[in-house]
Image (cartoon, rainbow, N blue to C red):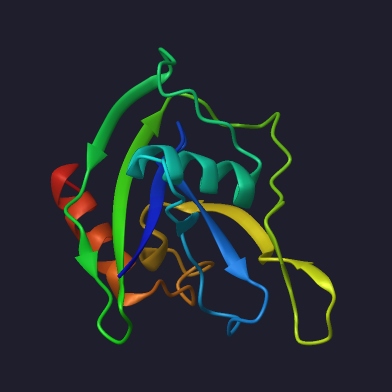
Length: 154
């Protein structure tokens, strides 16, 4: 079974970073995540995927990290895949980081294209914000987001 690893990265404005996969419907977004590579820990994979998909470099030893949460592995319902997620709350707004996706794949036309065509910060409670209420996460990420909000007491 494939394991995907991702991070709900929460900045000091109480926002999370999400990406829009190039071939996904306009409303489907995702936390930065991707497949575990040989020799990596789950956390290392999640940090690498965050860098590749957002251009945000996370130093796990940084004093700016205020809290890190680890969630139980969750299985996708329709595929032979599972998701290992973390939440990292960091005292940084990342204003100096140009959000962009550097992870690529070869499309049907044989062209190298970015995995995500958009990357942006959205409020942690984006569902309550009319500007972002159209955004949807995959069911597994929705489940983890609910657990995250519970753990944060929100």
